[in-house]
Image 1 (cartoon, rainbow, N blue to C red):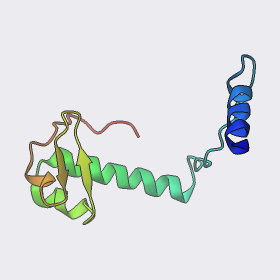
Image 2: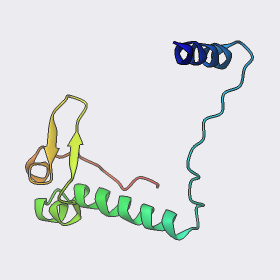
Image 3: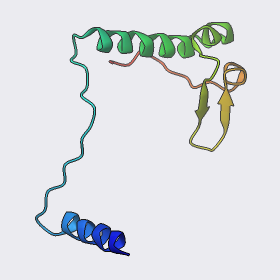
Length: 95
């Protein structure tokens, strides 16, 4: 059980008052980078399709593996989502 003792010791140090824990995360792309601009474009296309309310427009932006789960627990795939009760988005949000 030495590994259990080691894990417990590391946990105790990490959770001790005054200790600092650093979590490594992937760097976000800068706001002018190609990756950032591509992401913004993809999000705008998605929101624009949903705002249209047109099932064919929505299908055009969904990947075959698309899945979404709503807060009420209902879930949809790429075939079911366009025919579901879509959210109403009055205006394109700032992205």
